[in-house]
Length: 476
Ligand code: NDP
Picture 1 (spheres, helix red, strand yellow):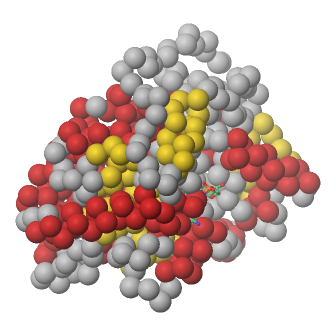
Picture 2: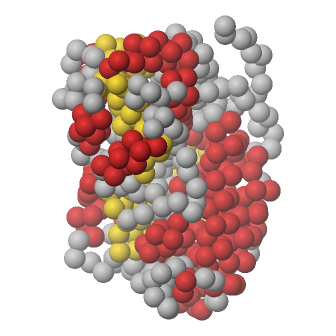
Picture 3: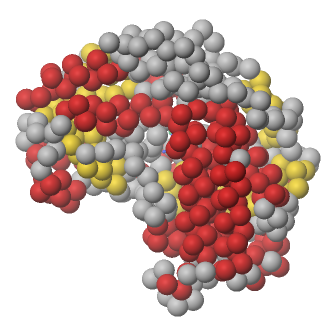
């Protein structure tokens, strides 16, 4: 039975969005030198939220210079214990301002407030707490008795988890003694700019963190700047490849966290209702804008019909709509460009002969929306089984034996994550040994912890973020 819900909108009164923003360079919000303004919109309403700067090469250069000076004069000279104090302070301010940040994140990104409030922002704070703990213990990280910072880190992040990706990048860099210039995604710069304010509030020394907003050209100017020592990128495999080519032969240390096409594998002995929750969480969390999304469901043939029946019933209960409504399960697609990409690949699915089923849910008139969708009758050759759709679209394939499940799961150029649903512990271990994926979740999906390293194989990139392994990316 479907319940009727009254709207439960989160108030926006706590958020103060300015009409326009400068760049955050050397501890101040500054006017651009050769940047140009562009507008940021709310993907759920298409309303303009603010005007921000597309930073030009001179702006990027100034930010890198500020980071270099802060590195040489201040940050690399502080003891780990002193750096930790700043990281703890930032973590606590994120917690104190968490409601404000969550509302801003949902307005800017389109994700449900339930997710930004309960997942993105608490986990961002947790990353700062976790890395604060490491700052004075680096000689015990297993990287030698005296690991050294690299210098200036250029960090480029995507739009799917704006503040969380910022935290994944900035917290370890700072803990290890590096300074940072970060470029948020073009469509989601507002929480990164708010983070600039948080750095001011935490009295972080000027230039240790710099935020340059902009689009692809700004990102490129940043990662190709000669005076950066480290490049950390999360985004599409295509851009990741271009960055790797540009960095080849230079002194820059590189980590890439790229796409995925994860298999979520359900065996006939699995608790099917629990698996359905995991499948829904795996592909519809954050509108499917998740690099490790369980976008390929591999279900054992003998339970396929039963599982799909349960899945469709569950999907029909998902509430799509206003990201600020606390009852919303699925929010807005982040941009019209991304919506076009999702529509296009879904049409390819139709064309290739897969069968589309869409949850019967009303969609708002304005904004960018895509109803939760599954494709059955998908074969491994179909593009929707191979390419990252990065939206709320699940491709369903079947298998008969565990060996076939492994073969199909690994038949992808990616290798970021996988899920396994079975009652048998021995089978979980057997599969985990054979799946070429950085993370394998067993009877759960999309679990994250700052202490646990995250990263991929093959075209999903290289390097790890989080945990002791993630420190290696920021130390020499
Ligand atoms: P991009 O890879 O283009 O964007 C990621 C970040 O890189 C953004 O900040 C972007 O800026 C920046 N950027 C773009 N071009 C360059 C460049 N040449 N040099 C340096 N930085 C650059 O992803 P899109 O947002 O265009 O999304 C396209 C597809 O990529 C999605 O449909 C999805 O499949 C995949 N994707 C995967 C992600 C993941 O986590 N694995 C995350 C995001 C996307 P700007 O925002 O201005 O484009």
